[in-house]
Image (cartoon, rainbow, N blue to C red; front, side):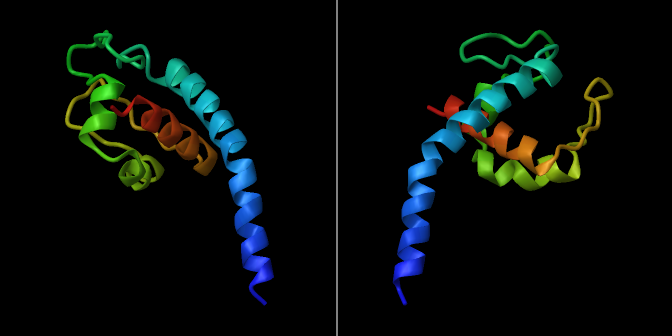
Length: 104
């Protein structure tokens, strides 16, 4: 009876790197398209908008996986320049993967 869970785990481990690489690439495209006008999306670069923290700072200040709920509900902040947005589950996974790549 333990064979099925073990097989499932082995399959998950075998595809995880490819899935993570795809999520990372999708996450990079997502932040370039939707966020780079205000946020620094690459490490060690300043944000174009002075009130927008660089993504590397966000990734190191918060555990990216802890932000998933906020991304799902839509991030609302206290300044008018930040647009309200919601992300699909796939976009959230991609964004989390990208943020994880920025952690020190």
